[in-house]
Structures are given as C-alpha cells and as structure tokens.
Image 1 (cartoon, rainbow, N blue to C red):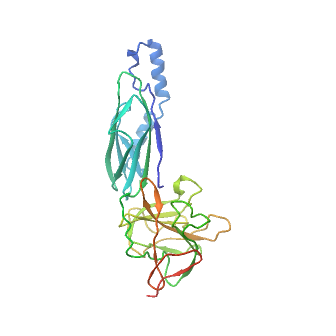
Image 2: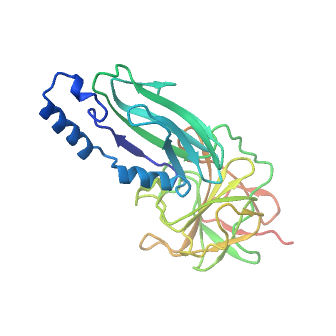
Image 3: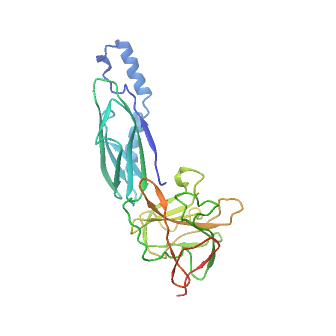
Length: 306
C-alpha cells in the first residue's frame, strides 16, 4: 500500500496516581481496573506488536512507557519512505519535538521521532495519534534522459486503450499519467527501467476497491521514482521484494481486466512522492522509430527493430 493509517487511543486514567486524587479507595480501584479493561492495547497486544517489528513493512516502536512513550519508526521496506506522526487529541500531553512530525526514513533503517510526556504528572492524561507513510523521498528528481522500455516483449504490437487523463479511470492523481496497454492474458511483462522490487501485493491502491486492483508489482528506480505494473496474473511474479532487476527483465505475466466490458490490459504508471502523497508523472516510451514517444489513446505501440 502507498499509505498506512493507524490511530491508537490511550486511557486518561491508565497511569494516573489514583490514590493521590482524594478519591475513595474503592472508587480508585474501580477506575484503575476500568482503565486496564478499556485500554485499547492489552499486554498481549503489546507483546504481539513487538514481534511485528521485523515482520511488518513499517512499524512504530515505543521504547518508553504508555505515559512517557519514546517513539521510533522502523522501515523494513527496500525503499525510503516519508513518515508522518501527528496528534489527533492531546490532553495534558506534550511532544519533544512537538507533533506533527514528517521524516524521511531510509530503506531498512530505524529513526527516532519524538518523546511524549504528561505536562502535569499528577493530572489525568490522554492522547491519540495517527501515523501515515508514503513510499519514496519527496526530494526525488525524475531523470527523463532515457525513455522507458515498452513493458512487453519484442515482435509484438499492442494498442493503448487508455492514456493520459483517460475518461474511464485515469482521472486521479495516481492515475492521471498512467497508460493502459491492451493485451491478452498471460502476456509476459518486462521491466521498463532498472531498479529494485519494493512491493508485490494484492492490495488495492489507496486501500479502496475503487482504485487499481491486484495483482501489482512496484519497482523503485535509481532516480527515486517508482513504476507500477498492475492487472497482473495473480502470483505470477518472477521476482521478489528486495531484488535488483535490469531493464528488460521478466517480472510477471499480465492478468484479467477488472471492469466488465473492458479487455485485459496492463496498467503502467511512473509515480513520485510529492509530499505525503503519490502522484503519477509524465514519461516517454522508446518508440518504433527509436525516438521518445508520449503514447495516446488508440495508438499502437511496438519495440524498434534491433
């Protein structure tokens, strides 16, 4: 997925020194029990979270306590990410440094984010926060010197069924400059540019079924942009995450269409993080005459003769 959203709630009585508030002992005990019962993260869940540190793509780690959390973020992916930690509601809490925080986390690394603490330790406290991340570094500069290779084999000619601003489904930031190339199922798909495989997933883009559906392979290029190959045949990937691949290397085979009445096609887009959001960007293929081309709907595309 491009963005992960996660909100955690904390109980305002969780570590409150109840017996110093003037409450009766019985009332204090009841409130303390309720705080543990309704605390969103049980002890077992916290232990489970620790086990996820090295298995989930991106993990927020608390090295402190519930009342004084020290937040780090672990990026287990093979791409840099832009990570955001923001406060939804703070009651008697403060952050050092203050939230919201945006930070670029390199691939396979851990970075410190912030330490939270109660402003007045003897008073009730509560906080909620949200984390988000997006693949890619927003400081990336798209290198356009060499046109992209057509993502299918030589000696084949296919038709572009939808190009830039296509009315069928290319009306959003992530699809505006995408290209749909109509082709039979099981057509071999090749890398359009050298890079590293950073994601192979069945998840819908944007975590919504209105986006591009499975099966997808995402490749990080050397300039920091990413190529998305979607509508692939499920489990057909011939590569794995973390693998470095070359331009023209086989990565998967094409799959079925997801819209009734629309022929099978490959959805191809070049994406860039523009600041906590992925957007498709213009690009050119190497055309049949060995010149860069911007494809248009209805155009037939074919590799140049070798």
